[in-house]
Length: 195
Image 1 (cartoon, rainbow, N blue to C red):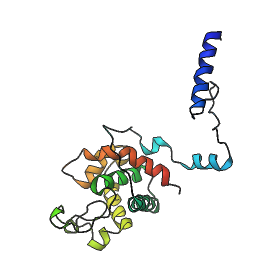
Image 2 (image 1 turned 90 degrees about the vertical axis):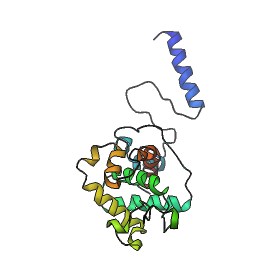
Image 3 (image 1 turned 180 degrees about the vertical axis):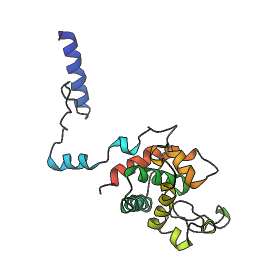
Image 4 (image 1 turned 90 degrees about the horizontal axis):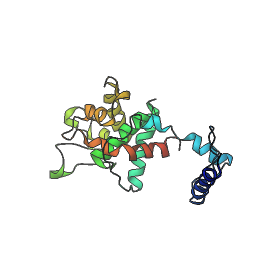
């Protein structure tokens, strides 16, 4: 290796390390994380693979909101219901993104004149359309399983872009709006899938 190239590579690696990002030797095998304690390695191993969460990459500009405790609890409830149903991480991403679009992960009760017909809960499901009773629809586990029952009926949902899979179940007036929440949904699923 010539000396100038070697100094450049070492300089870049040194800067990356100093910036808090580990840059190991330029080899074909994976670098060992800076914090290689058994607990840190176990936490990294427990996170779902990004290729399972976002197999097609995100589509379009992404939106993100700061979640309060109730919204975080609702995201966790969606993830728990997905696991209980025996569905993969991708189903949780689609579900969380759908709820982010429909309710911002808030379990909506009756909104009076601001309500979209009789839409309720995390997914704005309608009792009059057969989604369940108001009590069922406002139960996060029930509403998630109802959404996912619809998702499972979509032929090839696992291979569809998120917004297409969500729209096929929800039949929204804004069919492309679900795509903007894919990254935040994937981040939430990665954070809470094994917690």
